[in-house]
Length: 392
Image (cartoon, rainbow, N blue to C red; front, side, top):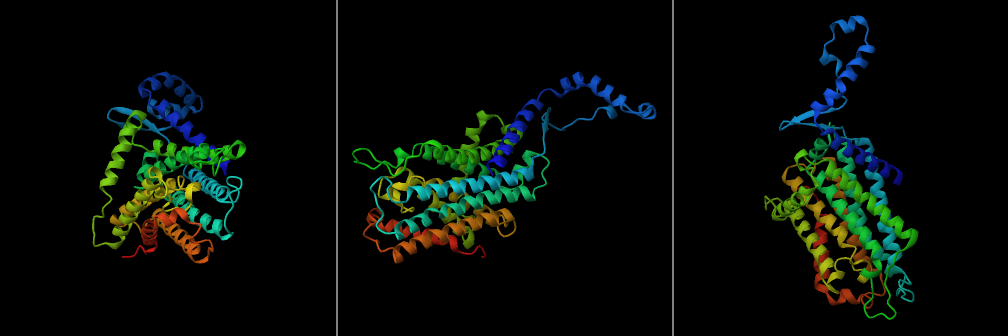
């Protein structure tokens, strides 16, 4: 999986460099190469072909040239088959990384001497954490589906093939960077206040840290490179990217409300987008016990879970737009995104039900959640919206 992902990253980097070089003056390159090209062509043609051949027949560009605003631009065809495999490998690597974090952080002796009250306690906590895996797989599957169905002749056409394609790639680039940073600074993020000596619920080092950062970082790099490569030609200057991203985020925020409040599916995804953004903010900037909602993982993963509620917010917004455009039940990539949202809701609510009904340590050993019961109930109600059908 990692080999496929690295090969794809290398290919994208190479094509980006080639495209940059291709933006040199076409006239200058033709003047330099014309004598050589003509000589080679004539050497391979018989006398009758040479008699009727013109200079324009002898010169065959090796890349497609498109003129925009008086500037000659060359673009290569995206390797959609290779991208499909790369997205599949990145999705599995990211899911495996998240599963490793959930398993190694929610267990006994994290830190040494900290024991779980019963065996059911970590089981349901891990199931709840792994609800994020559904969002991860849904996002990567949607990108692979877009590549599978695309007949784009250029990277920009690939980016335009689906309104969600660039946005999902940028979201996955963000989650990849954020996850890598969490792994690197896990000992700081999960530090237990007042512990002496200083103790943390998690601290990665050595080969485990390298593997996790490699998995998250390569997936994030794939998303970032594809996003950058698929931009319109006039937006490929990196200095313009902050403005483009800022404008896009601002537009999305003011567009969260449904266009038709009488459409229950639009309303559903608008509310899910809003709630996911609220969850992300609560877990990122608020102190305990507020930040324990909705993950229910105390200090262990409560600062990592918002990385994927953010991805859930982007996914729900894409689905809201697809509903408004009448594409949600038509395009395959949106079906994958919708399945990811539903899978998140099913696993999350199943874990909460399991903890409440089958964990003998509930509620005594759920101290943080007990302090914010209203938020916990509100979160479950909002997540419950994910299970509603996309049929009107």
